[in-house]
Image 1: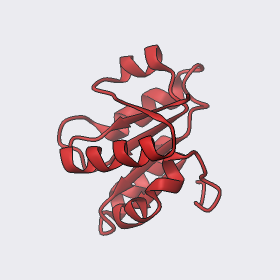
Image 2: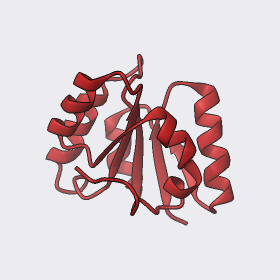
Image 3: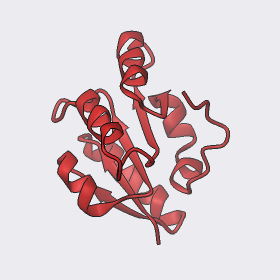
Image 4: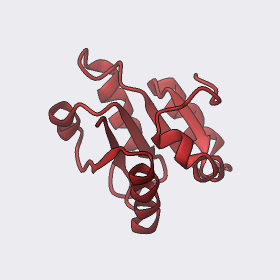
Length: 121
């Protein structure tokens, strides 16, 4: 079973992600630091750009600078009004940046690993 890593500090949202992943037969690990990503080697990282507990942009930059992590798709979500934050995430190398509403709507498809209908940066 391939792992999906999530860096999400909203417990309600994290629970939704876990439930959707279970339904798709995927394991979800909650990541607290970028170093954990090197150990866990997930197949995808789900990242809340509006997090207050970690620096999402630094996380993206770290992942994309490491040979062993840069190939892992990073899907970040944020409030649709955060245009500047979206741009910064894309500049940092984030593979997919989508509004929280679209993330919620497509959650079962996303956690199953099907990102084909999303626009890659």
